[in-house]
Image 1 (cartoon, one colour):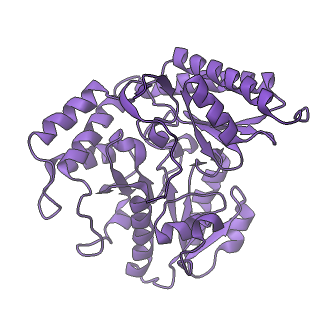
Image 2 (tube, rainbow, N blue to C red; image 1 turned 180 degrees about the vertical axis):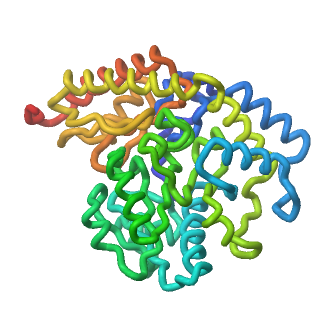
Image 3 (tube, rainbow, N blue to C red; image 1 turned 90 degrees about the horizontal axis):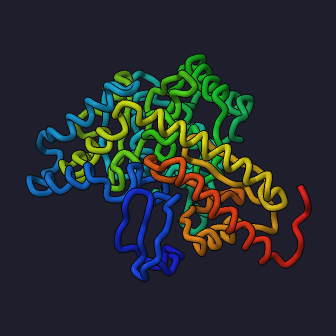
Length: 396
């Protein structure tokens, strides 16, 4: 179906942060399948785990125990705030399940009138009908009939607006620590702490969408750890399977215990093959020193991008983001898609985001040398972009 405006480019193999196209061209991948190939392409440990599991059993359904899922859940619990985990296939499913868990918790604790969720302008929570409503972007909602009710949007980062939006029908708040699709906009640590305090004050549930920034991308396993807070429930996906479809809802017991048999389910979610991939990714990311290296390389890349912005201040307004989810906000008439095309011509894969931002989400295994190479390619792409503009851009 004509749902994608695909680039005329196909890849036949990858290794680490590199991809080779069918026409022989080599690319440095700073998109990683939209922040999904967390450990890069063809990581030997991940490949071996998937192949070995595929040779044993791939799928049995959740009618039976799945030892691989039990092990993966236990490891995520040990490494996080959560008491239990529900596995699904994608970020949208994880977010749907998170909303259901929040509503169900209120109903099961004698507060069924509390079912509405506060979300934020600029958010992106997925493509299902309910998650389009949670996202609130009119462009995504157009043509799909009445918007699913139950979501109240407020400006991102505005605590007064959050508090004003709380009513007797409010069940909780869902926020991305870093808005990826919405323009690589990080919430301040103070704002995340204030949301936790507000939920505690009003008896609400705090849900975090860490689908894009989670699983090590911030330099810690979960981005909320930087703020020193814990959510009641959290969605995860993308990087947790290293490229294999896997999503998860992580929750504290006071939420998880209300999702009883029959209240939620999945056919494919948490099957042996997906969880073998998830366990292999955890092996890599939880290895001693891995996250510290991600943080070090991310800070190195940030400094290099700031220097790039200073060299091209007529085109680049701001460097944004956190960890290895970073963005360049461009000045009009330069556009993120124009820069994306010129970066592609230089051999660098990137992703456009909202607010005219070019997003960089490389595999977590990149080196400082690869970060420098990416900045050099962006430097050349910006020179190309400047030469293509119809008129000079106003100076910063």
